[in-house]
Length: 146
Image (cartoon, rainbow, N blue to C red; front, side):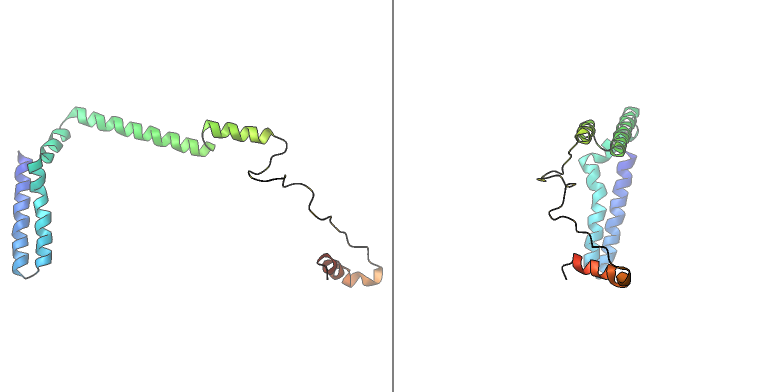
């Protein structure tokens, strides 16, 4: 009953402030203040305030909130552990099976990525003693086909 009285007083005070604001020709602000001031009385009329008051003073309701809090903490803890380990049990087993296979291939690949290349590697011919300065440059140019 006290909560309803307080909400009614807050609404009345808000409507009074809205009237003063409208008197100063700030109509948009006055309408906004009036809208905010009608919310507490609307909550009283719908019964939300009574429900909140009954909930706030009920030990059973507080125990329910405690149980919900414990459930949330447990859920978040298991999610953190699951992320740290690298997924669910099924994902870890699938990863272990994939690691056991000798020729592991990326999904969608047609051939193993660690095979021989499409063209053979060429080695530069050994250079003579006088061409030591340009042997590295010649090898690079031959490699690029120049």
